[in-house]
Length: 140
Image (tube, rainbow, N blue to C red; front, side):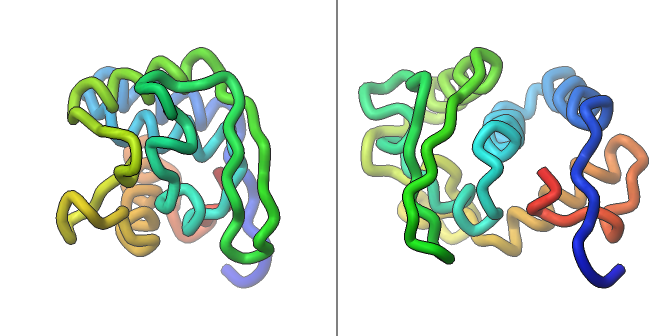
């Protein structure tokens, strides 16, 4: 499919969240909720650091992230559900200020790659029966 892809519907979002909660996938739930709340591009979601959303060890109400593409800061509000997911993830893996919030396979000091993020988004979409080719990482 070429061109703009449609956003996820609220029913899709709730289905994905429910699947992740039932499966106990804290990292994926925190990442998905952050992507939904922030409306950031995938490259910006994976580059988020603990300091950006939880500077004192707990998720804040509002966060600011500088976009790579435009260089402009984006301020967004984190819902209670997202804050709980981020707090649970940080507590589970022991993240510290300065760390990448979402680390990938390249080791603890490196952030998740955009390609790994795209694979996760495809996995999330397929888990509720959606065709990942009809949606994109920015559809969140």
